Length: 104
Image (cartoon, rainbow, N blue to C red):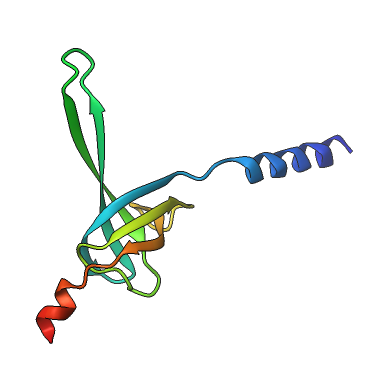
């Protein structure tokens, strides 16, 4: 009985845990079903208070290969999908149409 209560408690805890989300720009789409998303984090320097930008690159799963370089996307944290891939593309916010215009 106690074990069942603990399992239920853990399931409820997992339901209310917030997933990490990031907004970034696709910088590479050369891999199959994977894109590299650059996320810029801006914060004030601890001593000088100047705004500092730090870029982090995440590999994200893109199931249908929809994302192209320059697209603005929202990525969410997920279970490990490969050695370096722990994020998935939730939605494409702004599609970059310059590649399509150049082809036409």
